[in-house]
Amino acid sequence: MKQLEIFKALSNKTRLEILQWLKDPPASFPEQIHAGFEVGVCVGEIQKKSGLTQSTVSEYLSILQRAGLVSSTRVGQWTYYKRNEETFIELSKIIESDI
Amino acid sequence: MKQLEIFKALSNKTRLEILQWLKDPPASFPEQIHAGFEVGVCVGEIQKKSGLTQSTVSEYLSILQRAGLVSSTRVGQWTYYKRNEETFIELSKIIESDI
DNA sequence: AATATATATCGACTTTTTCCGATATACCTA
DNA sequence: TAGGTATATCGGAAAAAGTCGATATATATT
Image (cartoon, rainbow over all chains, first blue to last red; front, side):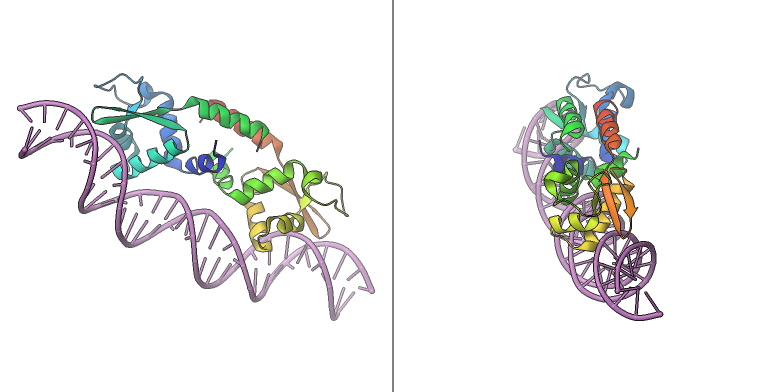
């Protein structure tokens, strides 16, 4: 667990929002055609909701993924991202006792 | 609790180290003359250990303080900084359930 | 009051991050 | 295989953060 990388990933308003949206996809996004939300939410949906460009959102998702906060699954032409809850739990414990 | 400000404050190697040092001052710093460690550790000691300049360390401590991660007490010409454990506990809980 | 010490603030420069548009790549369908 | 859609990557301009030296401020001592 690379703490510094995680904190940097969390140091951006939009990235925090994305993580929030991914907490409850049905509440945050219109129902998807190609999958339920089990695999996550595709980049395009996140991009639309964020109001930022496609390239920026793709980059932000990479940052979150490198930090271990989300993981991705490719299904056809879509890449679905979802939260990695284990990382949040681990981070919470580290803050409680190690930081 | 301003999450974003906290994460930004934690997004720096030296600031993370400072917080670490403040976890156990007797283990990290030479014994102080003007106080035990109840009130915290003075800026000068932290500065020496960090290897950065006085102005940088003073600025870093302000950032940590604005984020609520440390608090300061002025005693004579010294300013002593110590951790605000409540903030860490609160942050841990927020990561566990709100982020 | 003058000097010394500890800390804070200011101005400047460098490095990193933010965010974009353009382009490349991957996959799908006809 | 050609064209369309989704995502990733690249290159760059602007904003923010990192870091310094110089200076200001607060306190202590003589």
